[in-house]
Length: 446
Image 1 (cartoon, helix red, strand yellow):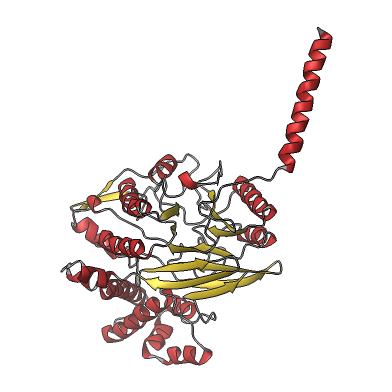
Image 2 (cartoon, helix red, strand yellow; image 1 turned 120 degrees about the vertical axis):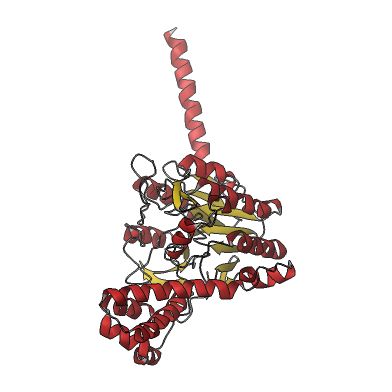
């Protein structure tokens, strides 16, 4: 009997060694999402969608619009439909949304957005999403009834995976067990990593407010390294998508916006020669490239799809080249073609620009009044100035030479601000100049 047992154990060991040997020598093969060499994808961030079923347009809703940081909330379904119709017409391979899909994590909003995205998947256009800091377990999830805000069902982690199952998770090559991160083998040349960079409550229950900051948690970082290593072994390139930023794109928009462990994460990306990272969160269109560990690492931050000029990026990706171009959602033309007569939809670009302009002016008035100003004529001039430079910065049109910056500082609005509000002056100084000459396009060779 001992002899028989010994033979069985020996056979098992031989089989295990053989499996281990052949397993190591055999390359891991993963069927890519598509075989085509050139891929086109569109990228959007921070749509902050609010479903119409959550509001009756009463006073509570009107009040929230005044504190929504210039977001357009009334005609989101129409603007999304215009965008989806354009995508169906032009047939990109993918649409990618880098977080803050919903206004404040309302489950009904997520379900409606997933319903809209299904139009794309039905036409063979893959849609991939990752959560932002406003999407999951958000204690601010509300519906607006008359003069009251009422709690509405928030999105849980399980809800997110279920609602957006067709928007990434079903096509994933690998999942991270410790977050909502996943990877996709896009074609024979590229893998895409979609990373969940959010910080959730310890009990995974909705709290009073969502956490603004983000991080790549330790176990998720290990999973990312594994994905990058496997891609390198098979001579594949990797692009990365997340919600939070890896660079400080503005000195006043860094705390709570840049990853808590950005330096460690950037070093990992540089080690595996990741060329481009996409993110959102700050609502401002911006492109930055820096040298990290002797490699040039670029981050493209998409402006928020909920504010003017409602921009999105079109990326054409081949084996050796990368071409990015910012576009603006043309709701106006779509509305005319559909014979829609609603003025706000028919003149949508002007409408959303005015919303954002008024939000910038409110910021100026509040700060100037708080500083003790009483001269209304001067406050009007300063507020107009703030509204104008705000639009310029958030739309990615903020490159200025030193001479142009000096011209800004000679304007009456700037001088009024400089004399009366330290906070506003610091804010304006931080947004009137960007040393990168182009935030709306990028061409790279790999």
